[in-house]
Every structure is written in C-alpha cells, then in structure tokens.
Amino acid sequence: MNDILLQTLGPDGALVGEPPDIPREDLRRLYRHMLKMRVLDGRMLSLQRQGRIGFYGTATGQEAAVTGSAYALRDSDWVFPALREMGVSLWRGTTIKQIVCQLIGNSGDVLIGRQMPCHFSDRGVRSVAWSSVIGTQLPHAMGAAWAAKLKRTQDVMMGYMGDGASSSADFHAAANFAGVYRLPVVFFCQNNQWAISVPLALQTASSSIAIKATAYGFPGVRVDGNDLFAVIAAAKRAVDCARRGEGPTLVEALTFRMGGHSSSDDPARYRDAGIVGEWERKDPLARLRKHLETHAVLDPAETETWTEAINDEIGAAIREAEALGPPPLETLFADVYAKPPAHIEEQMKYALAIGAGAEVEGAFPL
Image 1 (cartoon, rainbow, N blue to C red):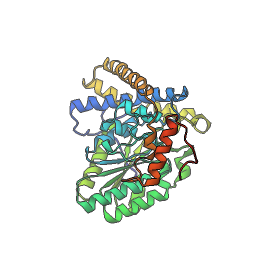
Image 2: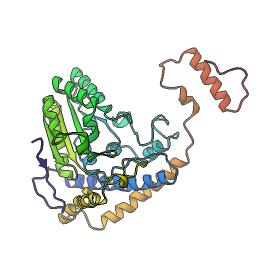
Image 3: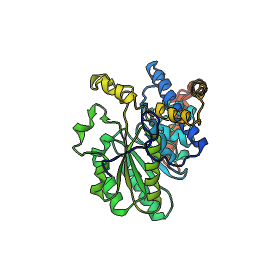
Image 4: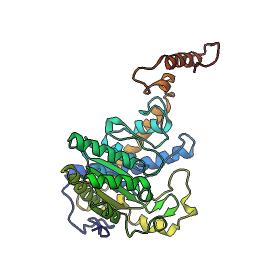
C-alpha cells in the first residue's frame, strides 16, 4: 500500500470510496474548523504585512490534513507539531485570542514571549513546543511514546513533519527506534511537495514518503491529504494500531502548500503558477463544502454566515490581544529553577528596580 493513494472524496465532492462513520454534527464542526483555519490564515498574513506581527506560516490548502489528523486523536494524546499544525491546537481547545497573543508575544501569550511567532505550544492542549530546525520534534514524539509504553498508558503520540523532514537524520533516528520497540507513535507527514524552495524530486529518490516506513519495519500509508474523509480514516487506523500496542505508522498526506513557505517567502520565484492552478481545483475546503451541501448537511448560505462570524471573532481577538502589554519582567527569571538561587533572586530584584525607574548603583550582579 506504500504507493497507493487512498481517496474517498473526489475533487468534485462526490464519493469515490466508503467514507468513515462521522456523526452529522461532527461533519459540520469539521467543516467550520477548516473554514476558520482558512479565514484565520488570511487575517494573520494581513497582520504580518502591516507589521503588527513579525512572522506567520499559513496552512492554506492543507486544512483537511491538519483537521482530519486532529480528529483521529483523543484529548489525552500528545501532539508534536511542525509549522503548519497550529490548527491542531485550535481543534483541541486553543482560542484565537491565545494564538494572536502568541504571535505578538505579549502578556497573554501562554509561552510568555519565549518562542518565535507561529511556534505555538501549550500543555493545556497537550501540544509540545517545536523548533524551526527541521525534524527535531520527531525524536521528541518517539521519546514520549517510549515513556507511554514504559508507563503502560493508553496515550498515543502524533509527530508531524513536512516532506523535507523525511530526509533528515532526526526522522531516521525516531523511525528506527520506534520501529524496533514498537512504540505508540504516528508519524504524520504533510507532503506539500516543497521543502521551502526544494521540490520533492530533488530531496528524495523514493517513490513516495510512505514507502520509507518499510525500512523501519512498520506500515506506511499514502492518502489524499485534501480529502478529509480519507485522512480521518487513515489517521484513525494508525492511531488505533498504536493504541493497541501494534507499533507506529507513517502516514503520508499528499497535499499542496498554496502560499509561501512563510510570510518571508515568495514562491513565485521557484514555483510555476500553473501548478497552483491545478491544486486550486483540488481545494479541500471546496471539496468538502460541495459534498456536505449535496447531502443536505450544510446549507449553502451557512458558509457566508460562518465566515462573517469567524471574522468578527478574529477581529475581537486582535483588539483584545493588541491592548495587552508585554510579559511581566519577572517572568524573565521564572521556570529555570524550582527554587531560584540567591544570585538569581538578586538579579531579579535589580532588574525589577531598574524597570520601575529606580536608580541603582553598581554593576549588574552576576
């Protein structure tokens, strides 16, 4: 199955396979979430262009892969994201205001300004911090899966990556160890076919990403990443397999990054516009909308109504977030020691005094 592309929902919204059993209200919630991701991306990219946030990476065109994989997890499972999985946290309970605060790095930021914009993580939704270094979250996911196995919990780890990360040493280390010890981890690859400006054909000679799992002794599946139903089915099988103690799975979701790698990138410099046009016809949001409207799960007018409501929610979140000040100065000294040693306490008192405008004699205590 490594090179067979699994598909349930065609580009025209018609079923081409057996869909997973998803309750009607969940279908509506899934579509609204994908719509929220799309609208949020547009608004945040606009904020970046206005200089109100410093950096942003969109998931436009990849909403089905993000949302479908998130749907397959339990709340108790842990997520190890890369750049385009902020929508997973959004699905698991993160608010838009929390996301905007993280992008600004203000006092409302759950990470108190300690991470780059768009590098969201939060223990409250079991999403672990990631680095911009490619693939480093995968050994973390594998390590947490090893801990879960040793502790005999039922938790599953989902380690996300792009296609470029499958060529990294960290991917090899994580997959090899996970395969040997049959760990409860799913490696979920959003193959959007570009590792920044490097096309897939120039960074791997493998016929697919999924086939790489064979070398590590566990299954690899390739799924249409713009087909929400196929993603849910493949991700759920992988998660259930891991939870039963049957080891890892590599899921390759074939999708496409519609915009740049980030707000710092101009894809027109390395990518033909005709390719973008081809993938616009495979839009995951339009595909799902057609299907839901055809089957009377979604009223045609609801998309416009929901879009307006989402825009209002985002607008309110931006106003509230931009009204907040920077993180308190004392947070600079927090979370390093259980009990701060005397020299750290002295440094904090000195810094707070200067921050309050007091005149302090002598050099900064080291």
